[in-house]
Length: 600
Image (cartoon, rainbow, N blue to C red; front, side, top):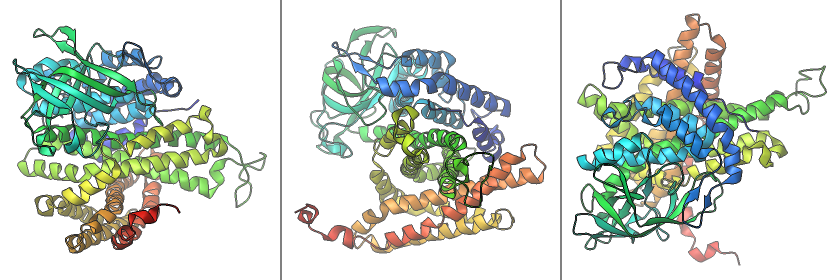
C-alpha cells in the first residue's frame, strides 16, 4: 500500500523562512497570516490529506468512475464523503475573497494545500481544483449579479465548477470551436454543442455544477476573435438562490484514460442549454486565459505533487529493500545484504528527486506569492514586477515542472525494480497520473511556445530582463558566502547560457521563425533550471544562516546545503547542453519531406 506524509516541515521552511510571509503583514489579506496561523493551516492540512485523501488514492484508481443509465456519474467509494469533510472544514475557502465567503488568506497557503491534496489524491483534487479556475474567471469577468449568484456556493464547495474548452476536432486551436450560442429573448443564450475531456464534468459530490463554456454567437468572426464565454449551470438557479429545473446539459460518456481514473473526464453534450454570457461578446478568449493561467499554475503543482508522492515511496522502499553490497565493502556485515541506499545509482535518482521536489516547491510557493503581490503590493512598481515575473514563469512552472515531475515519478518507479511495475505497490499510478500533467491545460510544447513566442518579447522584454537581473544580483551576493560560492557560480553561468540563448533567438528567429519553435522546449527547460537555481540560492542562504546561529534542527539545514550543492553540480550543467541544442537551429528538424517519416 503506498504511503504519503505531507511535507509540512519543508512547506513551513519555505513559507516562513525563505519567503518570510510575515514580513508582508502590512498588505491586505496578509495581516492574518501570522507564523502560528501558517503553521496551523499547514499542519492540519497535511493531516487531513494524509489521513482522509491518501487512503482513497489507490482504491479510487482501481475502481474508477461509472456513468449510469440516466447520465449521472458515481465516483469511487469514499470520494463523496471526503468532499463533504473538505467542504465542512472550509479548505476550499482558504485564499478566496472574504466578500463571497472566503477566508482571504494569501494564495501561498492555498498553493501549499493544493500540493498536499494532489500528492495525496490527484484525481480527487481535480474536483475542487477545477472550481478554482472557474471562480477566477467569474471574479475577473463576471457581472456583480453573476458573482453574487454563483461565487458564494462555489467558493464554499456547495457547488463545483468546470472549464469547457476542448471539442472533438479542436484542442489548442480554439478558433475552430463549433459550439453555438443563440440569443434568447430574455437575455440568456441557448448553448448547443459537444465538449470533450471535461474534468469533473459530472459527479455526485454536489447538487449543482457551474460549467464555464466557450461558444460562438451567430454573427461572430470564425476565429479566436469570435469566442464568447458562458455560465451554463447543470441545474438552473432561481433568483432567490434556490435550485430550479435541470438544464439541457448532460454527460454523454466517460473517457477511458491512462490515469486519473478517479476523476470523471466527460464528454459533455449541450442541447440548447440555457447559459449567460460572462463579460463582453467575442471577448471570451481573455476570460479563458484567466482560467487557463490559474489552471496552469495548479498543474505545475500537480507535477510536483506526483514527484513528491513517488519520492516518498521510493525512499521507504530503498530503506527496506536489501540487495547486494556497497562498492566500498559491506555497510552492514551482520546482514546478508545492504539496503538500496548504498548504491550510488539509486542515490543519484533519489537525490535528483529531492533536489527537484524541494526546489520546485519553493518555486511554486514563490510564484503564489507573486500572484498575491500582483494585486496587493504596496507600490505600482512592485505590483508590475510581480505580474511580470509570474506571467513569464507560468509556462515554466507548468511545462518544466510537469516534464521533470513525470521524469521523477518514472525514476522513483525504477528504484523499485520489478516491484515498481506491479500495481499493488502504487508506483504505476503515480507515473500514469503524472503523465496527464504534461498534456492538459495546454500541452508542454504549447507552454514552451507561449514562453518564447509571447512572454520573452512582451513589453520590450521587460520581464525576462528583470528575471536575468534578479538572478545575477542574488548569485553575485551569494558568491561572497563560502557555503554558497560554488552553487552561485554555477547558477550565474547557467543564467549566462540562458541570456545567450535569448540573444540567439533574437538574431535568428526573425529570419526563420522555425528556429524559435525548434528551440522552445530546450529554452523552457533552461529557464526552469535557472529558476530552481535561484530558489536553491535562497534556501541555501537561509540554511547557512540557521546553522551559523546554532539552530536546534541542524540535520534539516545541513541537508538543505548538501542538496543545494548537488543541484549546482548535477542540474545547472545541463543549461550549456540545452543552449547548444538551441543553436543547432531548425534546419535538420524541418528538412525531411513528410513522406520520409513513413516506414517503407
